Length: 120
Length: 107
Image 1 (cartoon, one colour):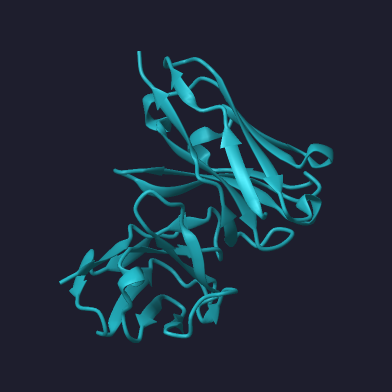
Image 2 (tube, rainbow over the protein chains, first blue to last red):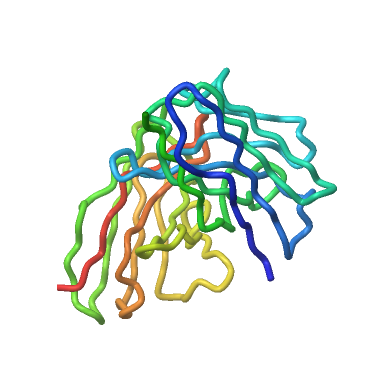
């Protein structure tokens, strides 16, 4: 089955860290760029970060630069997001998302999301 | 960044009616406009990419048009399963941005 399954979300205090993981199956993982997109009731959908198929190109939205790190392990068909110095505004449902190609920035497969709650 | 403005915020229609959703970009994005559908409790689903190309498995009643700054998603005859929230997204300019969504609800 073609799917993405996120894990690692939870409740964390401001300033602390969290690592999200995404397990991919059912497609050739190393043929595609991957992304993290988050969603909140207030701000809607927001692209957070993307990584090309070979990790040669990595991008972040300005609000997370220097705090978040995206990575992938093609041997394990897995995507990661290391989130440091978390802020209240990072609280959201985080989706692992598959690109339609090597780096097209169009998203044709989404996980069910993992919730990140930042609160003291 | 490129701001996408969707209108209307809510569209109240009956099954069988035609739905016309708008997405306007704050600067030209050529045809690099994508549409997604999201139902409650579910992740978004790709409908249309690059303004007018239906994604795999998307019914023919969904169509997209437009270029530059003005885009339209049309659902020719609403089915019960089409009542959902629709988002546009641009991939022309960094960073990727999404519109605020249009909710299509049953009248």
